[in-house]
Length: 166
Image (cartoon, rainbow, N blue to C red; front, side, top):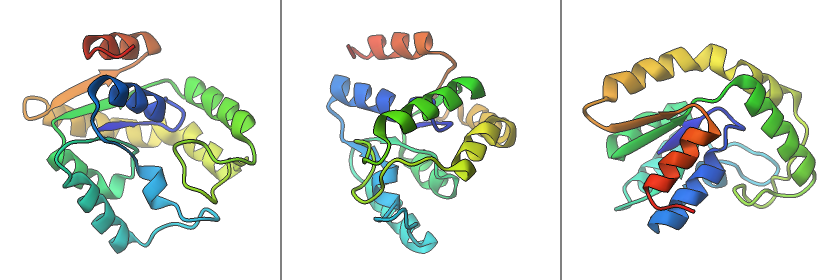
């Protein structure tokens, strides 16, 4: 399970893990968003995530706090990309520029990349609003689950090297 702020590199990291392990790769964004950036109904979304998490093995990237309990229950390893806000904002800006008007590989059809102030505000305040509770939750899981908190590209690269990723 790969979580962290938007722009931290969850999808890129998850793809590298998929390449190294051969496990199914699931980008939650591809299952949540419908064309035109329409959101999935909350109850239906929980059922979708439950179905995805019930698969025998997987790498799932994405936060979606309302379904984190489902994924945590089924995950054996949780990787939190705990990157600084400035880096996440930089990467989101670069991503918007690179994919503007087209769909990213980890997004569904009909959801082209776009400039969205509300989303940028979400990224800018993510660590301030969510990091403390996330760290408390992850610390409580240590011993029960493998929890990896990666704070830099170097740490991420070392982790990927350990599992045989290139």
